[in-house]
Image 1 (cartoon, one colour):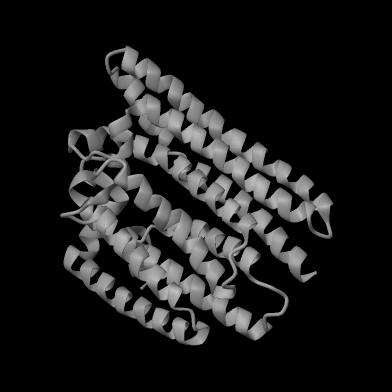
Image 2 (cartoon, rainbow, N blue to C red; image 1 turned 120 degrees about the horizontal axis):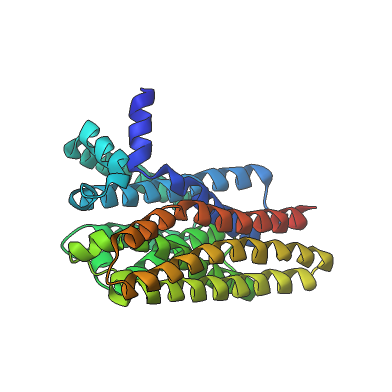
Length: 321
């Protein structure tokens, strides 16, 4: 049983659990108010988080199946290949169908409890984008600029907005500013993952945005998006706290530049090596360095998303204390 759970966790990309938690915390921090009954708040949190994770797991499993042939050529993804082979594609498809039915039932119940049809519409669009991002024949991930648009919506906008609208229907301008910053940051830190897959994607003629731009320009875009995203995010929280009863809380925002600068130094290194790789006429050792460095990207994602989550927790506590 434990082995089965481990395999399912692998194909469902369990590493997305913490970023999903971050989405919930950010939406909760901005949307929840002290007037909400604590029992109601607990029910809404559980339902929202379950739906977000269920939808994320479905998208990850579809991606795992769709990229199976490509991942066969990448030794760093042996764990995914082994997990698929152990379960079998047919059983995974059965899991996806069951998860879809269960998640849909939870969404319908959630709408009944919450009485907010926007959540249903958002879930339908989000789950559809997650499906066609990876699955043929549409396969948005191979369609240049459509790939980042769908990723930003599915990973950066919809989960946070879903969590936010769980607790309120009022759209706050500072929240929207933070959401824009988060969305830019998320795609910015996803680009190194595309860089890791660049060589395989290019060989298989999968035209991701990174393949379209090339390694050097992709690194530049990543740096710009993460930097701008951090500026937007800091501005939103700064305005919220300066206009609140505890303006000194804004000093905590200094942890964002620290975490962001750490990640940017890694991407700048990728940028430097990518330029060397292009100028060296595709030196094999430099290619390996690019792949090995970008393989650490999950840690970089964790550093930034958890930094943002900590600030959201402080924002939430500040509301209720």
